[in-house]
Figure 1: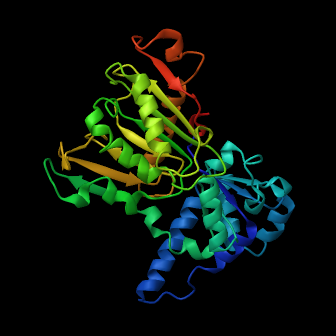
Figure 2 (figure 1 turned 120 degrees about the horizontal axis):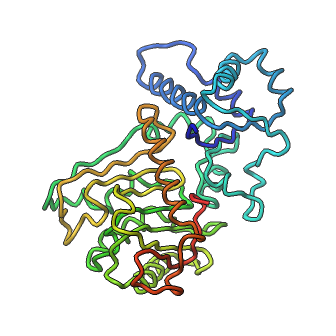
Figure 3 (figure 1 turned 30 degrees about the horizontal axis):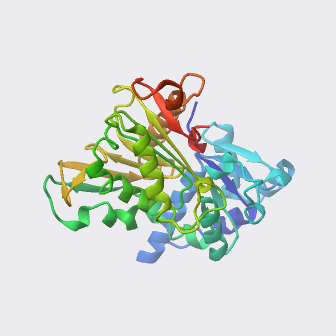
Length: 348
């Protein structure tokens, strides 16, 4: 099955967006950037699971005068994307609430006519990306892969997790970390895992619980202590958060359960070949690279869409409660178990 990102798009946004494409191409840097952003957004939409807020009859009527929409329809009929007309069932952004919003919406991208303040409020409340026509023209960072080359024993502070904050800050409501050794060394946890979580988990309380799941192997038989310290360390830095606002699960895996090391959110993929326990004493322990990408948005990295989907499918299979026992049921000596809430909207 083709991996696709769900996109909710107001048709009024689509009309405005279609009109944004530069009609005259001139050797002007700002115009070229605007054109490239338009193409990137259009290419992203054309490979997505797209939902409009109009019905099918309205879609047919609009295609008579909308060249871009006709091209989109051809891509739908050719299997390159999926196009749905939700009509009255469309989840309008300004009507979303913690009671009504679905997990599907929380993993989606929105294109809307809300102003920038409205888009920001939605991002803060629900951890989802919402773009209007103005912000799409400044979203070129989403379509670029970012990477940092790390040299062993390098003490340059710009290579710390803290100094990657400007690169990887983004709306986020769910997070999965896959790394066999991220919880192995207590001396490294504060300098690595906690700094990564400080960047990715919002400081401001959301309208929904934040979901964090860690799949790991080596915890030195200290799973309960690791879990308690992790939860306390996150909550103590977030004013107004309670245990109900944070759903954490640690999954103890067999050593060969997961090979690659990755962090995924509802919008992002972060990879590090050397693992996420990378820094010790403000120095890198290894020569490696950190890659920061946005699955589905980057047209030059189509492999990433599949890799992102594969990782979530593997995590979902492992986290199946029918096949997995709680640490309270079987004890820490067992090779596989979970501790915590056993919930993450990224994996069902």
